Every structure is written in structure tokens, then in C-alpha cells.
Image (cartoon, rainbow, N blue to C red; front, side, top):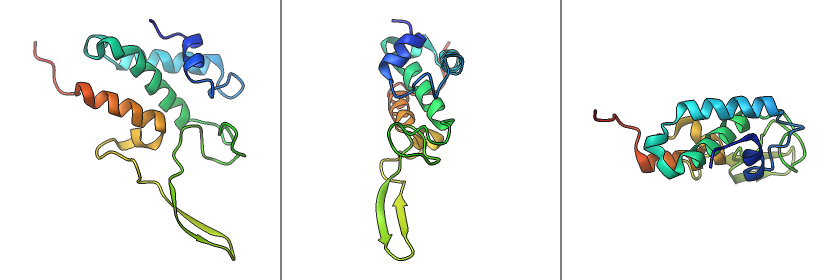
Length: 131
């Protein structure tokens, strides 16, 4: 299977054309395909493209593009974490966003898609290739 705009939208329907125009998705699909090595990824190459594209799009989510959650700056797939403390008057809430993060994942830990991408990436390794 080759990843297309249609197959991306089918896999991730939360990235609606209203919030993520076709051109933006297509650009990110192309970028992801150039960043990944098809030989190294083998049968999971398309999955890598899908998750990397979704991650990059989620990072650039417009404010309010939260898939059913009422507005704000948190985007689709961006982890909110576990509530670690609360207050009632004047309202306060602390969130632990470190839960589920993998050491060394860097920015890939910022979205659920990035975490899935990083999990796949570590299965193959990213080290040098012997020629």
C-alpha cells in the first residue's frame, strides 16, 4: 500500500479537511516519505509515514482543533496527562505530562502519534547502515 491523502484521512479521520487542508496533509505525507528509509522500515514503511505525518500535523494543530474537546491550545493527539493536584477556589489544576513518555523520545513524546512512531522507530533502530 502506498500512503495517499485518502488513506491518511481514512486511518486518522480526526484530521478533518476543515482543520487540516489537503495541501497541508499532502505536504507532510511527502516530507515523511522522504525522511524514512523504505528498505529499513520494510512492511511497516507506510505505518511509519502515517504516524510521523499525524504527529507533525498534531504539533501544528490550530487552536481549538481538539476533536470534540471544547477549544483551547491543546491539539489532536497532544497528551494532557494525569491530574496530579486540584484546587477549587480560585481554580487550579496540575497535570503530570511525563506519564507514558519514553526516555530519548524528545518531541515525539509530545503527541500520541509521535509516541507510536517512536515505538516503531526503536524496533528498527536508527543507527548506521553497513555498506
